[in-house]
Image 1 (cartoon, rainbow, N blue to C red):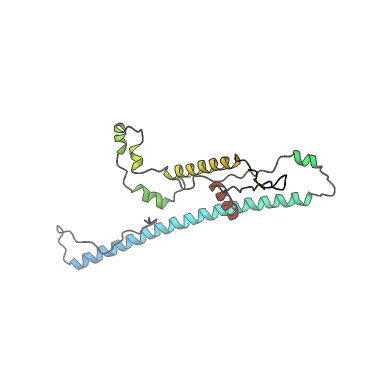
Image 2 (image 1 turned 30 degrees about the vertical axis):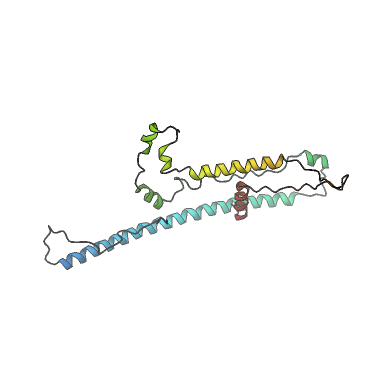
Length: 218
């Protein structure tokens, strides 16, 4: 079900009635004035949403500009290092190369992107107007399995637990594949009949997300 992010209010400008306790000389004029007032309220709501949208775009553009500046600074430093390298002058032995540790990037991937802290202000206001869940935690004392009764109604950690179980299954599968031994074929003798070991590429959800993030330049 789609959830509207912003809603211009009031939605119906002319859907109103004149109170019976008020005696107005012209009912049509009263309805017209009410419609005009609701139209002004709609324009005010539209102006508020427009300010919120442009503020959000400004923050996103500022964040993108900062990331671009950081990337340009890294490129400049790398260009200086590349120009200073000369393979003909400095000789490095094979033993020194093997003793050095492999390069490991210090890039950290962002986590918990969809949290309350990163929620847009318009969506946060809509979330605040939602009804609170029923107090099902009062039924916990009557349960024998020790589970929280509210989680049967709503569970914010459901997708995280689903992702965690998938990661554990991938880890167990990788360990199981590594523990398999290469079987010798029945036919043939010597090294010619020996089966060729095929290295299976890692195909975990974490590696896929890292590859997608790197391809997007994040």
